[in-house]
Image (cartoon, rainbow, N blue to C red; front, side, top):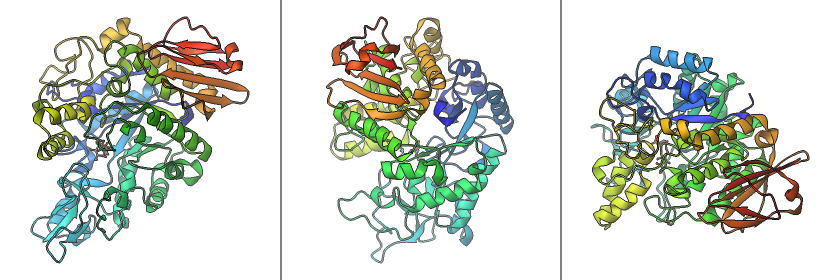
Length: 547
Ligand code: TEU
């Protein structure tokens, strides 16, 4: 099946289903739920990392790329998972975290012990003459981005947690080692690869200070050399498999660079995740802040990226949710009265768009944030660091907590809610994160009498059966409507107009004259009357098809 017809589901293994009662999800738990996943008719599953890791960053601090962490199971379990998914027509996408390794990784341990070969795997630099750190870069998790490496007198770079040491991609041995990891998993039948923060691997050799007022990430993000690295990795590994599907996580990237990363003739990646639309509820670009989402800005970004990538021949991964983001329903929809309708509206926006839609586990049943009431409930290193930083900068506990509760990555990492029982049917043990709203939101009830799951089934079916959705061009509808984000898809003579009301109030849209003769391809409300002044109910989506 063509990439444009495919839909990819994301599983955070730690929170999907626990088969052995230790309170942590595992591979055998996933195997036991494949019949559920088959009902969605998805094509591939992206698994967050389950390799050997000290779990300081929930598995993004990898200590061995070749072994399954015993917490999640064994290699035999993984091989059974791949085979069972294959029999169900579902491919496997693994998460390749190549910007950094855990400081527990053998390579770093050898560097720490003075092995010069492995010291060249990392960015090790001496302090400045005045004894200050080699550079003034900031870690994305707060604090300086360099720390001392043992008693070597040197400092190592870590753009994330201090237990995540950045690999030096200028070193061909590092790039070869990464290609070998990909090929090892390809030999296990893996055809999909997600590359974690891959556009920050192009740091310069000279770690130059960021000028005052300039964010250090601008110095090392999306640098031109990343295209060279991706071309090389493509040729040395996944590019040898015509059916491989790859996606790059590209923080702070541009349309121009993303066309470069994904244009098929460039032989880099299949598609990219960009995050600009998920920063429209950031005050002045600051994640740890609170504001209602900026709808005009959201429309401009969704439209601009879709039009730009179409014009340039690039390809987008389309998503609202992942393991790093609060649940989209809490940010862009309604977690209360219109939870169901706004879940369906948000799904329509991305599933009828040009690109490859990703469904994050629980999105298909309308899961929302847990609304924990204490900092003790939060586990994520980024959230804990942010809380401390907010309080240090003068925020009251209450205000700091309110911000963390809104933006913490834990919000999407709570256990998948399988039923209404106290542990949501996720574990027989003590869940590593507490479910809180499974009585009203769970798989069992959703399959029994819900409508969101069925709506996702319809969207996925349309992508596989309607070439205009999979392969049609994208065209801007209008960006000045106060409540509605709409867009055109076109293929030959066929036109599809997708209208999405982002608000809990009804509104009217003046249809282009020709569209009053269109048929209703899909709506999350029944009995749509197609007329010049089209009525849209709260959070209503309507897709109108004109042949
Ligand atoms: O995320 C990249 C990243 O910058 C995240 O921290 C994310 O953008 C941010 O939390 C949003 O506020 C990747 C992984 O998805 C994330 O889970 C890892 O923590 C991170 O890289 C380091 O590997």
